[in-house]
Length: 339
Image (cartoon, rainbow, N blue to C red; front, side, top):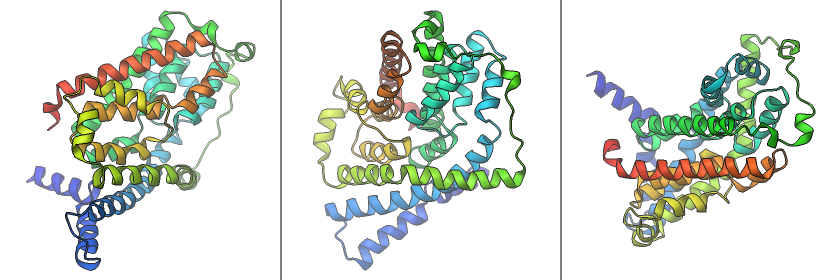
């Protein structure tokens, strides 16, 4: 009985089956679209995903931001300063999950952490996990795929962040940060004043974050859903399977390399991922594409190049790319576990 109740809640609140049925009814019975036509498939995909994503985003960003209000950059720096070694990388990666930043907006936080004297490896663990994993994206992943896939995605994202940051620490690459940051380093954490927020202030902050993030990502959501709708309704399944299907041994590599030049939040890549899965693309290939877009977009790499030297940048990109590719092939190999 409990499993049935949880399943119903998941289908109605996260997957929004009621919304899918309403959209299908509107285009089939009111607009008289042919169910087999590309117009019907594309339009129903587009409107269902746009409405669902914006409803979930608004609710999830509010609650995630309320939690995140307890983890200001100042408090996060102070927490990270208390840990050493791999534990510092683990805490840095975990703290990245409660910060709703894209890859580009994470970089100023990364600069602040490095200026404050935190080890570069720890700040890179934060920089990798922050755009990859956050509370809102986890629930959105579960609403589109399943909880098993969403939780596995989180674990893999954290592993890549911890391993990447740890490797950078082991290689002692702190000296490859830009000179202007090294010259401004300070360990005076105790001098940082943290503003005390009331519950009213936190609620206000959460609403402001909803407005700010929706304003920032709405265009990427529409573009992502639009591309997903075209893939779902127009592009033949055979084409997709030939390029990105499990029979192509290079599918994960192609998806990763295609994703890197793109720039979008994870919210904009989810509709594309959904459409690709519906076309028969392996879940590992799809997740590799999502991770490449969110963690290694070309604009973020250009911004990072401004604050680190080439050797550190190449190490960072190389570690994350290799991690994503390995993850993709492992997900495809063990996809039967997520059915």
